[in-house]
Length: 116
Image (cartoon, rainbow, N blue to C red; front, side, top):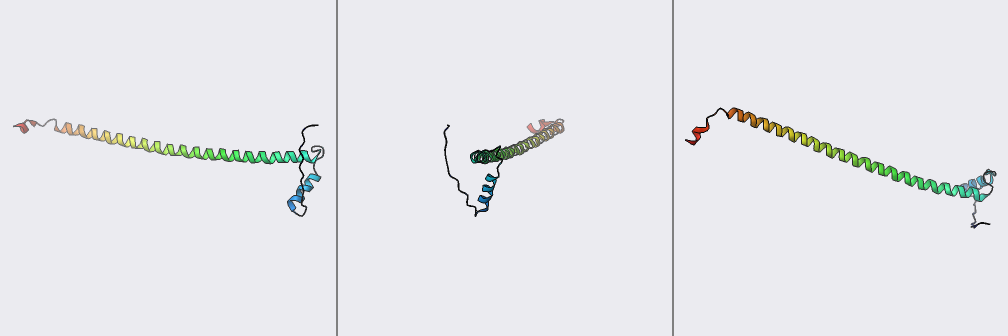
């Protein structure tokens, strides 16, 4: 015989939850669950697997939200830097055009009179 562990479970039938559990144990599918141990083992494992999966799901959703916020923040920063670059480039072009226009306007002036 294999390694067997034993524990005692008591159901207080005055409590509705305990009454419900006891009735379910009594009315179990005896072909699928030949003993209380089979049903209780499956139920305990399902409970803890579900709890672990819920924690994994929560963690995954949290990471997805954090990632989305980081991407959004990067997009905002990058777009503002791009806009600033474009505006600075336009200002630089305006300055260059103004300088060229000023040079064109003063090209015909004889500046020698200043030195006299």
